[in-house]
Amino acid sequence: DVKVTQSSRYLVKRTGEKVFLECVQDMDHENMFWYRQDPGLGLRLIYFSYDVKMKEKGDIPEGYSVSREKKERFSLILESASTNQTSMYLCASSFQAGGRYEQFFGPGTRLTVL
Amino acid sequence: GIQVEQSPPDLILQEGANSTLRCNFSDSVNNLQWFHQNPWGQLINLFYIPSGTKQNGRLSATTVATERYSLLYISSSQTTDSGVYFCAVGTGTASKLTFGTGTRLQVTL
Image 1 (cartoon, rainbow over the protein chains, first blue to last red):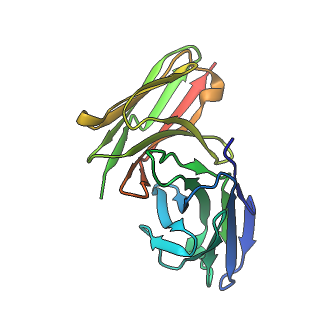
Image 2 (spheres, rainbow over the protein chains, first blue to last red; image 1 turned 180 degrees about the vertical axis):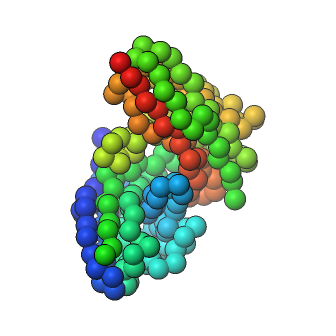
């Protein structure tokens, strides 16, 4: 079974703190993704990575950065957390080619910024 | 960008009833997935179905890519089927997903 894990289920941080959200997958997937989910706005793509050290902006990258130093690990970084970044963050991974684009999601991290 | 619309937005069923959820999308896709979001927020994969028909137990799905819609069928619904169902479509080489706004299903006794 595909397994995508996220470092925390719940996280509480203060405004201005630097926040790291970690995601690890065990299926040797090339693609990894970070989404956020907000009531009334649905799920939106923040960043994705298609290879180690490669990244592309999604629909809402402002205020975020990412790091992918190893194939299995994709980190989302909030350089200076703000209250409007309080949200549910979901990581996903998938293969890149061969028609196998199915994405698998981690359990999510509920981040509260006070 | 691509638009994804789901209907109905809300659905209340009695246990044992059948239902059909619809997903319309505005452009060609290379990925279409149906998810069930559980009460803890995790997205559970139901179907990967960019075209054709699949069945898994009481659930089945059909995607008609040429007409840009997909249907999710739930038969003999159970209370554990309650939750939010999302349709998401992907395009391009990385097949980034664009999500619909979901159908909130409540199954009552």
